[in-house]
Length: 54
Figure 1 (tube, rainbow, N blue to C red):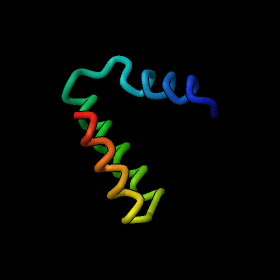
Figure 2 (figure 1 turned 90 degrees about the vertical axis):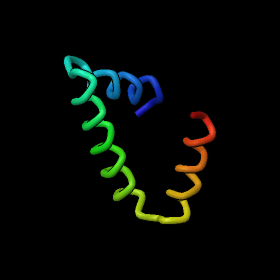
Figure 3 (figure 1 turned 180 degrees about the horizontal axis):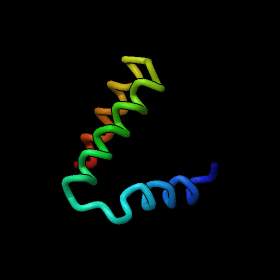
Figure 4 (figure 1 turned 45 degrees about the horizontal axis):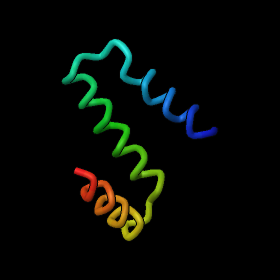
């Protein structure tokens, strides 16, 4: 999957959702992805990187 496909899939994931439903689906996706990664050190680095942009 190329980056444009990933972006399009994320946009489609949120299509038609209100703000609260969008937040819930984001939270669920984050937990599913964290479970898939399964490496605590890697997850901590990713969390720190995400926080830097906030």
